[in-house]
Image (cartoon, rainbow, N blue to C red; front, side, top):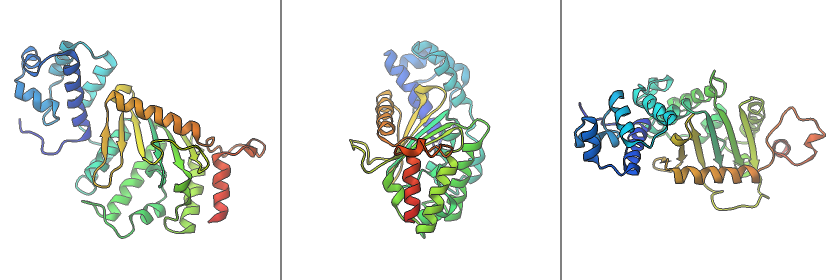
Length: 293
C-alpha cells in the first residue's frame, strides 16, 4: 500500500491516538505489531498517519493495549473508516489544507468554543467583513473568491440538522476594529445580535475593563466531538495553524475558556427586556458601539 503524501488532521490524530495508547500501555512497537499480525514498520506508518489500518486490526490493537474505553474505541473506528469527504471536498486544491481540516473538524463537533481578541470568529463573519479581512491579499494556494465562498459555506453548520453548540467569547477590541469601515462593522455587529437568537449559539464580549490574565491575547478554537478525549485545540499562526490534543493541553484550554467566559459580560440576549438589560451585558455594549459606527 502506497504511503500518503498528504495527511489530513483526522488521519494524523488517529495515528497519534494509537501511538499514545501503545506508549501508555508500555508496549513496544515490535510487540504490538507481533500481537496483531502487523510488521513493525507498517505500525509505525499507521501511527504517523501515513497509511490506513483495517477495522479488525484496529480493534485487536486497542484490545491488546487494554486502556481505551468503548466509546473512545468506537470513535477511533469511525475516524478510521471515514472517507473524509463532505461538502468541503469540492474545494480540494482551491483552499488551504488547514481550511479543509477545519471544516472536517467542525462537521464532527458536538460543541465549539472560541476566543478571538482582534477579529470576529469566522463562523459569525458577514461576507462584507470577510472581504475586508482578505483585502487584496490572496490566501496561499487559494483564490480570494474561493476562500470567501468556503468560509460562508462553513457557516451553514450553525443551522444544520446536527448543529453543534457554539460558544464564543469576543474581545471588545475586535468589535471596535474598523475592518471595511463603519458601515461594514455596523452590519457585522447587528449580525452578531441576530446570530445570538439561534438556540445553539452563545456570544459574550470580553470588555476592556475586565481583569486580564495570561492567555487573553491568544485566539483559539476548542473543538469537542462526542468523545471528549478526541477534542482538539486549534491555534492560529501566521504560517500554519497549530493543533493541540494532549490531555494536558485540552485541560489547560478548558480552564482558560472557563476563565474567559467568567470574566466576560453576560451573553447577548436579544429577547431580554429593558429591565433585565439594566445591568451591563454584552448586548448593551454592542448597542453602545453601534452608535459609534
